[in-house]
Amino acid sequence: MAVVMSGNGAAPTTPRAPDGGRVVAGAGATETATPRVTLSARAVLLAAAEKADRQTEGSGAYWHNVSVHRQLFTVKDGGYRVMDQDRSESWTPSAVGGEQWSQSRSLGARPATEADRVAWEQAGAPSEVEVVVLGKKVPMKLSVSEGRTRTGHSPLVDGDKVFWLGRNVTMKDLRGLPGDPDRLKKWLMASYKGHSTESSSVKMSGDAWLFTVTVGLIMDMPVTPEVRGAAFRMLAELDSVRVAENVTDSEGRQGTAVSVEEDTQGGGVSETRLVFDEATGQPLASEGVVVKPGGMQAGFEPGTVWNSYALLESGWTDSKPAS
Image 1 (cartoon, rainbow, N blue to C red):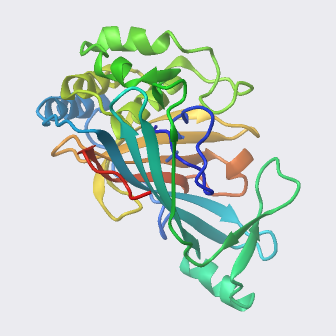
Image 2: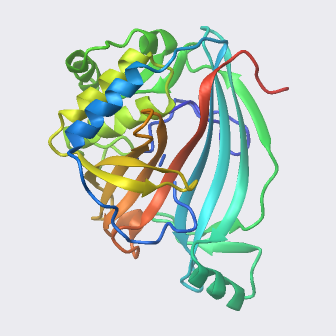
């Protein structure tokens, strides 16, 4: 994923790992209906690779992404759930020594379902709610109101690091990735250390790690159409990948999803899935779905989309925000 500014406009010290499990749920996030499964994952991914191969490649001074991230929380007092929402834009420079820019805005925490809305209103419709967060002794407070837009900029890490792809990488690294799926897999797996992308204390299988990292590549990064096609072909060879059609993302867009399961902190199991437009091969969203409640997903029903990241725009531009 791109190097994204924090809420106060300051940049993190290192490029962020993909949320694959950064990943977007809407008002219907707590629904547990299972989409109809049809074609094999391999067939769907190979078809997506053909579409990705035919995508056009642009150029510009900045790689620009617009996204919305949503995460489901349980309110400490009341037990109802809210969906916290944030809109982000990032501008990643193509030139070494450039500055990365970002704009972020909270869209507010909203009751996740109609039943949650009723519970929130019965609690007096508070303008701020305290939510339960794993590992935090003090509950986190979320506002239900939209926030103001925050703009920030900072130098690239080490002057040239732009994304995290198993390790911090440069724009030159990304543009030089192999377009052959076997070679691409070898390049990526050289960074696999046996643990998850989020915590060195959580074990993660090679397939799940590769899938999570590759979702970040497909969703966020300025790779060539050939490399994006190779990424889909590489995922097609993973035995653990599943497919589901007629999946609706948090923005209401319908697509096809491919996914793998992974263990999470707290003894849970989560499904990381990539939702894409099967007609074009364009990525729509990455989502975290509860398989076995535990950790951050404790108390959520299996099938719940608890964390999601929807891509709204992605491409090259010569413009950046006004400072």
